[in-house]
Image (cartoon, rainbow, N blue to C red; front, side, top):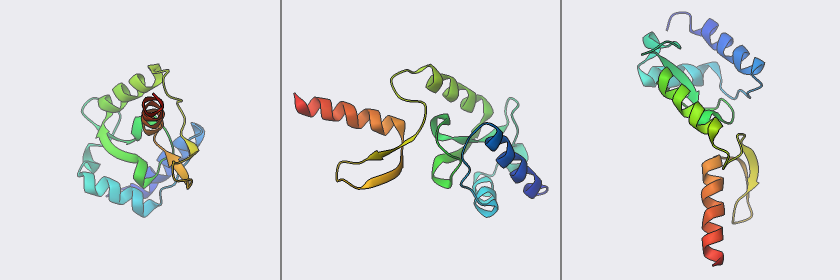
Length: 121
């Protein structure tokens, strides 16, 4: 993957400027792109692919990113930001068995809250 190191550093710096945590090593970042088969098609223009965070929330981490079309990422981000039902940031939460989770998907938080409300009836 030609120029990968420079692109990795640029990506990490852009995330930092946007205040987004970065938990990917260079090797993890390359492996995600390699597995996607879209390295040659990466970019922000129509028909190109980006490394996107799930629901445009949380850190750049191996468990929280995937490669998707740029337009799909924009669409998902717009849907997420318009939604007022769930906080737009990921947060530490306590799961039902009392163990602490480092990060939890905001949609999972909403589903758990709805489930608890249903069980109280």
